[in-house]
Length: 322
Image (cartoon, rainbow, N blue to C red):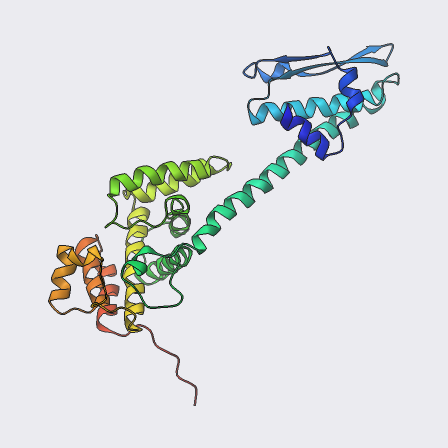
């Protein structure tokens, strides 16, 4: 009832005299009763409106609140016309009640949009953990949101040049939400937490975030599809996700931002593959590109792009035109 009264007050519909008049004339039934039972029932004698009765569901669900809004607004309209001819504005009253339902829904939708945006906006300020672990010396480090943009652009380029038989729009949507859980749990790397443990807490976080959205289940399914990695789109998206991080390493490496002698407390240095590659004389960025090739299921095309990055300087400043 508090939600209903709040809405009525926001719309300047709340009238104390109406609630006093309706005392004893409103019957509230359990929330799970068939909604078709409920309504605003005018008492008419000789086509003159004499009284009003309300039968409404207990407000437990959002749908039941909408029923209450509709019927209360309808009753409020009738209240203003007590003693008048009933039929004159019958259709108009019904339309007005329905319009207030729409007003509530539109307000609710706007709130959900803003809430979801604000949650996702956090990713702009969450720095990718790998760069801080490796003590990358740069004033401005890549955020998770920037990684999402980068991996989507990489996906478009890989699809363009290698003509993968995939639904690229599905991939782009999948990649848009693949880091959604990090708004709650932060950016945890494979060296900090097991895949199983991360999936558990991340899935719980994503389900909670998406619960309010009408398309939440559809978005959640895309997130889970990415994590399961079974469809061709999920496999492609996963490779893009990992290669993008390797290419970002290459870019930071070309800026000479990592000092391998300044890695106190960096446990990743002890990982067998990392240690083997660094001990063999590989640079930090080349080590990561080769690590990716050995650890992730890159196909020949992704390996080709990775190898190109190993063999070339990939950041080139545009030369001035002569």
